Amino acid sequence: MNTKQSIKIIKRAERAAPQEAVVEQEVEKKTTQESARDMVATVSSWVSEFQQRRRSETAQALKTLFAEPSARPTGA
Image (tube, rainbow, N blue to C red; front, side):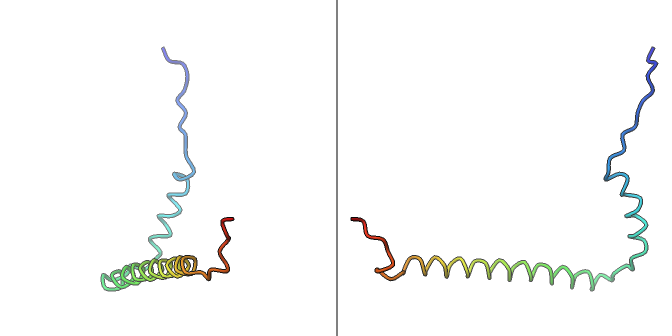
């Protein structure tokens, strides 16, 4: 004898989902070649960002490692 009514909880993501579905239908479908081109461009940008970050970190480490002796603190 359950006299309580069930309550349906609607989360924010579920509320936004129907609106997103309409937007996706309005967007033109990309060809396979365009999709592949976009993926390659994205991955290429990730790789170049990673390499750039790595180069700057290496340069900073070398500067720190080979700093002039006068710049180092003395252990007296």
